[in-house]
Length: 268
Image (tube, rainbow, N blue to C red):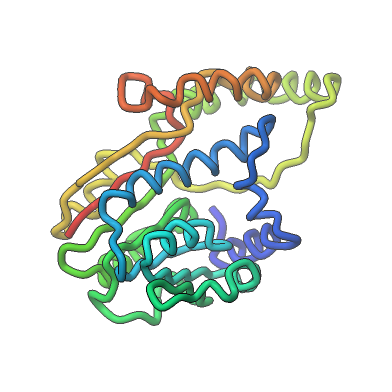
């Protein structure tokens, strides 16, 4: 598990040269780009029915502020906060001047376990791909809950521990790591990747973090369905991506067991 300083270092590095923002660019051949873009799409679908003009929105772990344009389009006020100073610096470059009389964008560097914002101040809070990096997610959850207004909503995404691909990876990687690496080098698809560990969550257990604090679940989605199990998705990434794209619309049915991540909306 990464320490907080390692998390900061990791994302500071990802912010260099706009590398983090590029993850959301439309690249038809990149599975990683797809997973980030489909998450943004699902978050927009969660926000659409609840976001109104003049609302205050806090994006915890905002990165470079990818959700800011949608919030602005609804004439709401977007506040982004992140541990990474480099991420916030990049965000300010991207959205400087995006202030109107009806909406605004602001970014702050802060410890997401102890944020400098008032209690019950925000109509909507988002924490996307954040909680899995913390050894004690309760501390971040406490802060998120503290800042939501009565009647306000929280939208959170986390990795799905029951994902079939994740389970197959755990079972097969000890056996196949060496031969898969060799085949990838032969085929010229071997890429060095940053290695880090993070928590994965069972949806029911994760829900209780918020349901036990007076929230009710008002929406859920599973996304980034993965049917080309390890090691096929690594050996044949383009084929795996095409399969992924074709089954994504079926995330509400039994195929949700293939989803690598879970997103949920709670309302106070």
